[in-house]
View (cartoon, rainbow, N blue to C red):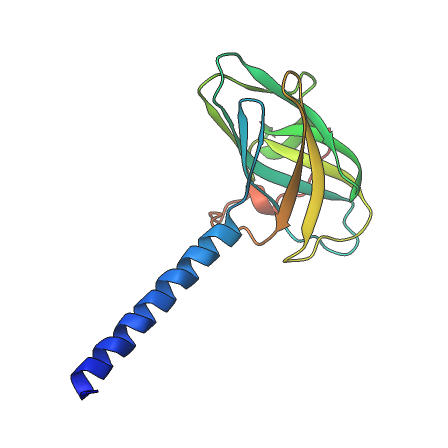
Length: 172
């Protein structure tokens, strides 16, 4: 083999390896679930301190149907209770409060549960959440019913630096 042919072969082999690695990383990072006409995208939670008793659950829900549905709750073996919450500003303080009627997902729309906004609140944690851990859960929708999901425990690398993520949690 000539030097040029060998160099081309090495370059092509390296390019294929890099492309395959990126594809595997993309597939491993994104995970989706489906129930009825609802698509649930990439459920995740942050790692928690060892004495924490709550954790937030984040994800997207896309309603591909023709009628609205509601996320009304859920369960997880990792927590004693799960509620759907929203973050509101009360006198300059970010506070969470439960959504008594759940979270509506209108037809053709996507709702994002993210830090500083809507979230699933896992309360009464049985143990801390650690980076890389997979936490089982079930979401319950008013019309579509229950769907089993897995929360990936990961850092929120896309979060902007804001006061919301560092504000002490005031429940109810």
